[in-house]
Amino acid sequence: MSSNTEISTPSVISSEEFLRHWQGHRHLTRRVIEAFPEKELFSFSIGGMRTPSQLAHELLAIAAPGLNEIVNGRTEKLQEHDNHATTKTALLARWDEATDQINEYWKTLPLTRFHEEILAFGQYPGSVISSLLYFVDNEIHHRGQMYVYLRALNIEPPAFWDRP
Image 1 (cartoon, rainbow, N blue to C red):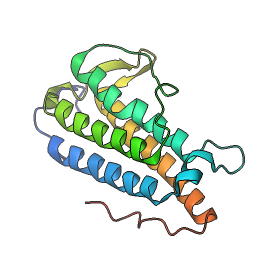
Image 2: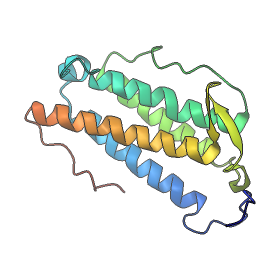
Image 3: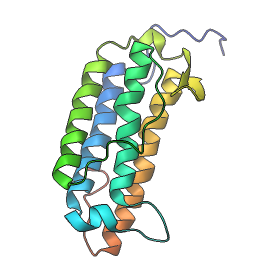
Image 4: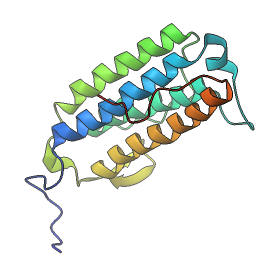
């Protein structure tokens, strides 16, 4: 195994494939958010866990702002408790806006930066790729919580494998 961390050519997945994978998850999470009735999106909880909208707001605070920080190098504090949308329509609009921002930021992220060490949100050490993987993993985790909520509400969630 080489100690060289710079990768000039991906051996498993390209940058474009990673973005497509991430956006597939975002598309599915959006469909899960859409499946909630308005009231339950902002009020339903099991066992003291956060509401679906609170989970979605955390995801909004991480994905586009985190990628913006990576590509522009401007560290900002994680803002998961600020500027919450108060309707499903507004939340979905913010989701779509963040999706577009991710697509734009991604265009400026060279593959050579993926192994660069960073301090995400000024407090989480790791590499660019480990941060990006965390963004996706965190979304999958919270979407799983939303699936449990939907099932508890007797609502059939979208198929978890149905990602474009």
